[in-house]
Image 1 (tube, rainbow, N blue to C red):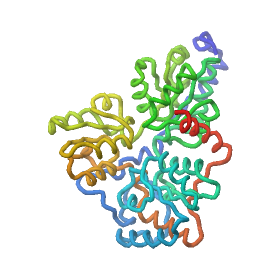
Image 2: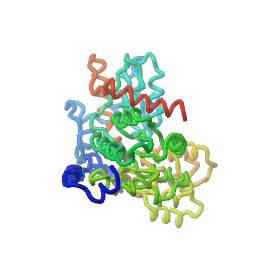
Image 3: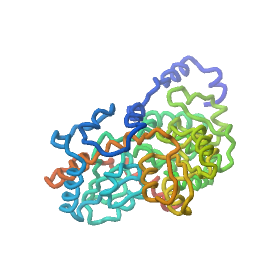
Image 4: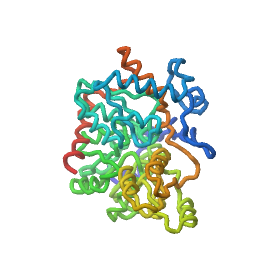
Length: 417
């Protein structure tokens, strides 16, 4: 579509553009993000019936699990795990509560866990204590005889939910129409659905993690003039800045406005197009929290995740992936002080594992990731005891066509970066 058509559209074009005006959509997972926030108590496991009081979506579960105390849940999980033996592998994401992580055969980020599970050839059942997109990735990378289980099917991801497939496809079609033969490379963050990974795979694109985002951007710019990045605008913007891309050459695509809210000239001039998505946990951090930490502890080290906003990343001393944060703090000298901008369950665990250091979360409000936190031990026990009865619940499967192209995007990252 040329410029004059944008400036002087025909009535049919106006009607067509009007159909792309969409009502703003807030994922349920986003609106429920603060459900477990608290200021005056530890994140100790409660019977599931008590946690049901949190205003979030919960999967129905047999009533016998509702009132089991933590000690009984732990005992029964241990017994079920022992009985299932090598047929079972349990994966625990870093952001899971301690009462779940203690049973994990592997602990890590989503990609690392999926790769480790795929390497356990004897395991028939992969129980992924994480969120939905992680279980999808595990299904894509695992062998055909392995079945991936998500203990609580309502454990989604608000960031992934902000990039709905139809919205992303509309965006991609609009951009292709404007750019014509100019080559744009789609990149999706690991925190996205299999469908978005598949779109990238089909269109010469790639997946990235927060660890390798800079290298993936460099890979993309070797192959195209522009990048479109899904679904986290903040990781995309922070990565672009690390490559010295000016902020005015990065635009945010609003899926609820025609052409993302931009005219064709602005889209043509942009080097990076950022999807309007974010992490509900990491956008809680702000510069005031950093200033407060520095005033109370002049020798503090501020370390944050690159899903934080640009001003927070710029005000910090260090930023990097979850694995980067863990490595930096674990290997820091005794007596060092750390204020951390990432999920509270991980920060608390780092503090417990490094008693010789001062480690605390930048946000004084204890606010765990509400979707990760939905994997209560009762759900893990339920899924394991159903396996002992010969029933697989909450199996996550990705259809063959979607998995084929999603794996292509993943393989580009794994083998070319």
